[in-house]
Image (cartoon, rainbow, N blue to C red; front, top):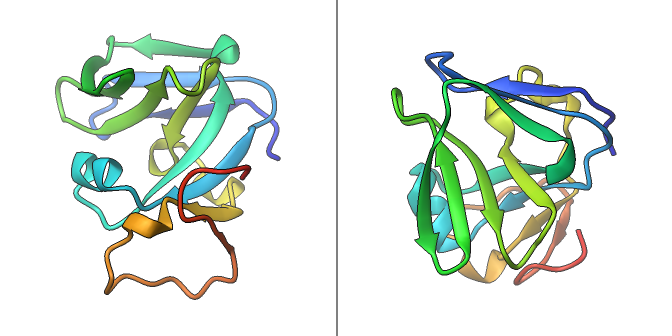
Length: 135
């Protein structure tokens, strides 16, 4: 996995963040909830330990998108920034495109492919998991 620091922020620059340590996993998510929250056919996340993560600048807004799931976004420009779920304690999932250098974070899998849009396909050779699994 990729060593920190992991630095990023929103489009307007009001909300920024930083995490230290190694990433836990990096994956493309195809689930309906992530697609709807971003308006994109997939969302790519970088997982960091919540204990190494901190917000800086303006505080993000938080939306409880489903029971036990929280999505953080910039209250000024609306950029989706992070995902946290009670199902994965101690993890913060960062939207890869909000990182300063997303090229440092190559994904290793696709998750929730059972929910993927039928016309969207990436021929990248990465593992496909119908739901969430060990990435």
